[in-house]
Length: 130
Ligand SMILES: [Zn+2]
Image (cartoon, rainbow, N blue to C red; front, side, top):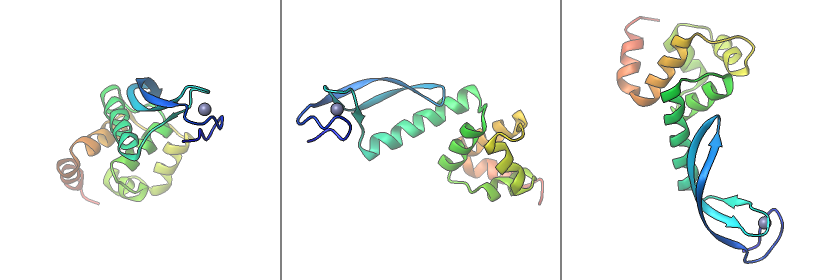
C-alpha cells in the first residue's frame, strides 16, 4: 500500500494512540505510515471515533457552533427539526452553528439529551407544543 501523503510504499503498521478532536481526547486505532506519520482509519473506526467525540461533548457540554453542528448531525437531526423541537426559527439554529450568535446552555443540554435519549427527549420537547 502506498501512503497518500508521502507516497512511501509498504510503510504502514498497526497503530493505537490518543488524539484530540473538537477539544475531546479520544482513542484512535488505525494504520500509521512510518515515513510521515499519516494515520489511516477504516470506516467503522471513523464512526467509533465520532461516537466517542459525541460522548465527550455531551459529558463536558457543547461549547461552540462547530460542536453543536457535529452533535446535531450525529444525532441524525436536520437543523429545521432542531429548530422546531426547540421552538426557535431555523435561521437561529444556523446562526448558533456559524457562531454568529451564542446559543443558550439549555439548548446545548437539550441537544445532548436528544443524542443520548432521542425518543424520550423528542417526546418531552414535543409536549411543549409547536
Ligand atoms: Zn507517509
